[in-house]
Image (cartoon, rainbow over all chains, first blue to last red; front, side):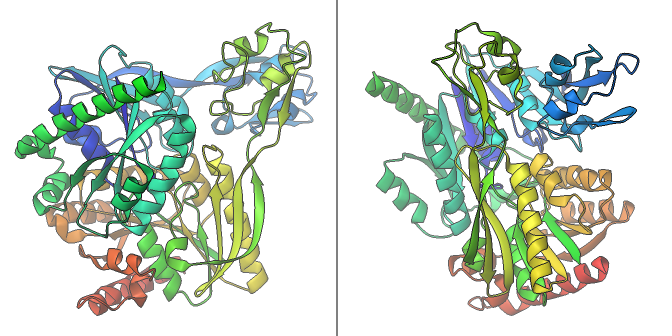
Length: 284
Length: 290
């Protein structure tokens, strides 16, 4: 079963929920898909080993064969090539690696070579398998790193996916093929507004979801009232607690110090599993 | 004209709160909300929309099933897994490269423009504002960020403004890069947690990569003073100014609930003190920018 932890607004507690949930379960896998800013391992402290590089195929021009006809740059939707009277300029960071330039070249002057844009790292531990993706500084191909990372999910087991903030491509890549999505929010105007955006996207994707309200005693009741109105399950509420905040700032998963929360996360997982199964029954 | 972007790496550190406060302190600025897929600035500034412009993102493949012979060449050549087994386009995966349309022997595939959101030119109580809304499930957020920035420059010219304050997105990728390229300075809002520090270092790396000067604001500095010192030492070692520190406070949330900037809110006994700290931060940011 694949469960994504997502939010819309940043800083609402996705990583906190993902890490503490994964640590509360037996034999889970945790995937940090916030590849622009992966933080899970700051709380886990594992020694990570490189699993693979993430490469984009970029064009290489054979200038002996190229007659500077310009068909490649005309075709490229990403402005990654510019053809001058006697030269071809390539802008590797703009290239999405679609391969179109080499297909349209009438002189077979374009070949492709992999360029590293990120890395997948992992660590297999007793009780928790952990993988993360990391986008290189200055690179743009976030969704590619996320897709390569997700190839390492063992779909026979439980996989917890920590998604990036926002509602655009990297968010979609992290939630698209999951069985259930947990949206973490705060009951503030910003948290509520971004929750509704995330709900719109999740509904469009047709994924079952529920909500965790973090810092539930800050702000007002607007999130819970909305969830009741919309029939969205509120799966857990986490109050503002100086001890949780202190442990968070130090990079300590709070279930390790506050065992009563471990039980709550196990219950959260059980609830999600039954909601998922119920949802599947009602669809049939 | 100067451009300043507020960024953070990590989400939820207080970018928008500080950007809105800066908007209220600036005398002659345009405001741009470039966190286009989770834009929140309008919830405080209540912009009155003057003009709405449709935004067209990347094109998308469209397969005319009456011409398609199911040969599968499009699927075979698509590097983004955007063609399904039954030869349909998966909108969420299509990057608009056009390879399928080129390769199709029957001419059954065309690339079509798709409205991917709206951009707005607005008026607020602190001056003109450029902002946008990405449509549900759309992907071209970097391109929309660039569009909002173009609009903010137009507004600055039209109204004779000499500063653009840009509220940036979290992360280090496409949208973030689009929100900082060519600006005069970034102000990084961080918090003294291990995540805050890690993400600060990465996003400062991106700013350095594009040769953009940076200053740092430490929000909630008192949740972990040891980590605050680590951030200050790191900044000193790298020649980056820390322009201010704000304590953990409920004031930003209380102000947000009333749709006010922190500067306009006076309902907390510490409001005055908190606002003074922001004013001081703003003065230092302006000194670095100029």
